[in-house]
Image (cartoon, rainbow, N blue to C red):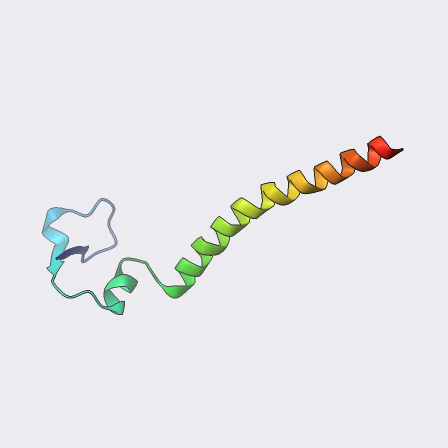
Length: 69
């Protein structure tokens, strides 16, 4: 059972809450889980992991080059 809000209110008042028994793609879209939002969240997560890793790698390469001089 999934409880949805019938209006765009946060937090959802109890009188606007609707219980649905079947989960469909439209249900996910009503919750704001669209393919675009999931791709954005996934891309953001990957960027948050790779950016510090690449900065650390570039910093280590720069330090090694400076030590060789």
